[in-house]
Image 1 (cartoon, one colour):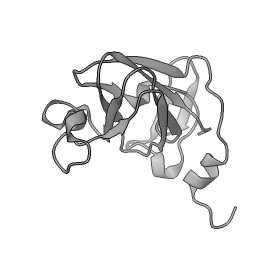
Image 2: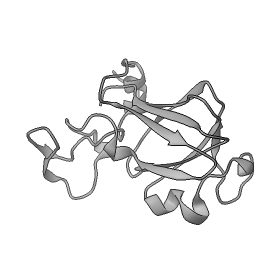
Image 3: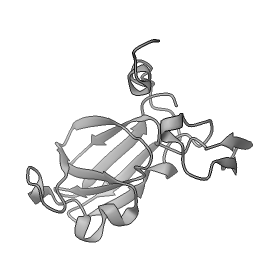
Amino acid sequence: MGGQSEATRKSDEITAPVAGQISVIAVSGSAGSQDLAAIGPQTGQMQNEDALPNAGSYQVAGSATVSGSPLQGCIGHFVEFFAETADVGILFGPTNASVTSASAPALATTGTNTAGCCMRIPAGTYRTFYIHAPTRFVGFVGSTSGNLRISVTSRG
């Protein structure tokens, strides 16, 4: 389709959550992080803008070897983040260090331009993001104990 970006085309193909491709993460007032490459589909091919460095042949868990860059987890997909039972603050980065320690999300910093500034997802609501490489990690913190559900909502 002429004139549409890859992300726009993917947003036209919203899919239902698939068994084995939904993660439920316990959140609390202490910040945590998750490798998005470990959640969701682990086979297929990435689009060029989502290709990881050092493309070659990869053995993907539970599948045959694929050529080029593997489609890893959430990367290259629209992904839904659902704050199930507590407000959740999230932020994204290319490395675990970019979303933890001094850079960890803090709900008190939402709306400010300081370290830990994050997006607040109110309890019972969700936000959907397109995850591009090199983004690989999400940092999260809850307003209290609760769950954050993460699921891929588009085809790769």
